[in-house]
Length: 157
Image 1 (cartoon, helix red, strand yellow):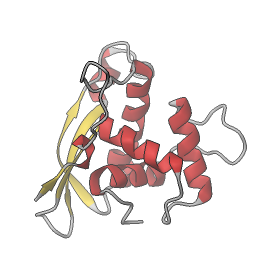
Image 2 (cartoon, one colour):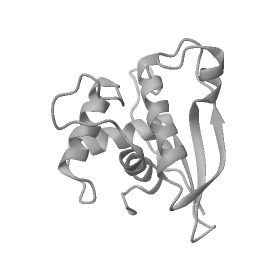
Image 3 (tube, rainbow, N blue to C red):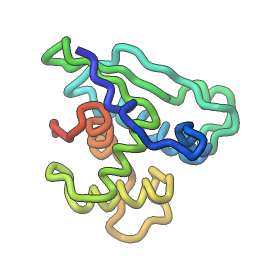
């Protein structure tokens, strides 16, 4: 069974098109998705396939080599049940981050939620100019956002 929570967005513009992500937003989402894939989700899933590459000049991903490495879509399989397959896109991750920023999630600490909310609002996973109590989006927080995008909930960790 393949589940793709990342495509369930129904928000459209007045012209009927889905809103586009800005280059800054794309760069931020690639940071979070890459952190999740390369450091956060390995204890509950394996990557089956993924797409890489962002438009040249995407902030934070300057240079052809960097732009080519950025994850933009990932399909994973659950380690314990290979029938459970999930796909996460940048748009789906954006919706998950928005949801995590709006309210409490029982498996995420208040500090973690504040950090996700600040990063999401500022499109900055590094939290360099963040106020006290806000940290970088590390593998654990990126995993939570990935889980919400993939599973519709934060189930593990």
